[in-house]
Length: 515
Image (cartoon, rainbow, N blue to C red; front, side, top):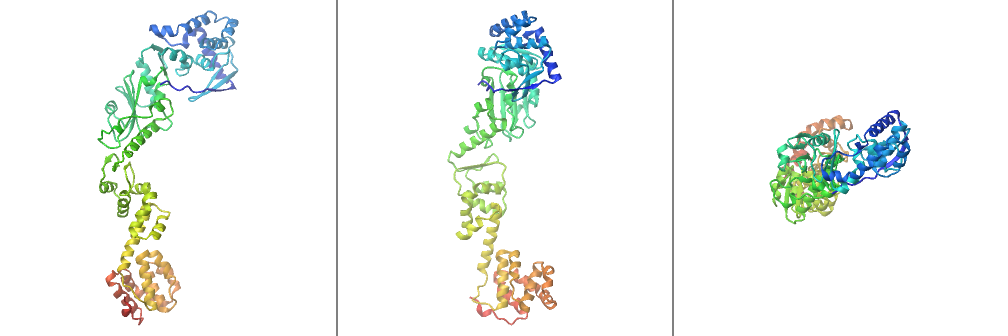
């Protein structure tokens, strides 16, 4: 596939002294040797391809000192017209105003002389730039289906055969920025032998095989950049009609370690990468996503975590996630409802729950507490699934405890107050209980009892000012009875309540009110 031609935008500016000086200097060098704009070659086919332009450059060379003739020759659109226009700059020794062309690689200045195409003028006036000089001959190269290589020390055509010189390969490898050794340029996470053998690693990676150079470039997903297309960096200093014939692109990565699945072998979106539409990281990600989609479309119950397949073993999959006890129960409820394949990498238990929470979370909560209205309230909480499950299971545990507590037809006021605080504590915890203590009866015994609960919760000092010295003293006496009551198991709840009420000095009787 040929590289995509990019549209060049231009505008004008006043030339700086240094810009003008460099342009005039290059123009004079070109006047001495107009053939600098075309590559060297030794093969017959390259000679045939460059025969016409060389003949036209012969004419430029003959009239290089004839300004009038050069002005006529500069009206041609071709490369030789651009050379003629550039030689006019050499004669005038000035270029006060320059055109500016915007390329993806940056802005390029040039003098507009004659009618040659802007890319041809840029190539002629920057003939010593290994990238820009390719603009002048790309039409010739693509038409002849030949191969041209341009670098800091040379500029050559190898004709119909792709045969990059060793110096050119080294030049390009330095531009890539990876360590280059034994025919492999790779990021620090990929060993030379691994790249050569296409070995599957823990990190997914992009592997580019430059066939004619017998060179491999490999970059892992962690080093791949969202703004970089390594193939573009490899090929921007060369021209050949179809780079897909010379470069093989592979994304190496398995969703299941040790698998020989067909989904892990085929690299897709290569044409988009070759055309520059995809960067290194986007090519890697799109391929791995496609492989994941292919597995999911198989319809099998398949659980894959960090490259390890657990088949349909939900328990093994959950165990590998290392969830807490609340997450574990939630995952069991959710994952048994999910059909097809689940492929996850580097996730927490909560992240797994989040992935399926919207679809299965409400059903999971309802199966725990068997109360649709309350399940809706828990599901609507603005918390993580993990935190919601903890609240739900704690509520369920408290409800289980409450179901075992004694049930009373009625209770006298003080005992009713103590029972209410205990059941609130066992159901909703300390925070809610403190709020309920603010609703205490206003008599002396109830206030003493309330203060004893505050002491158990460690809040007595904060509220002490609300109580009389007698109520504080009585509350301190009742503290251990209150603690025993709040912590009591269902079988000992009634006895602990009786002891607390008796210790408070009340004569209230509650035995006969048990259901």
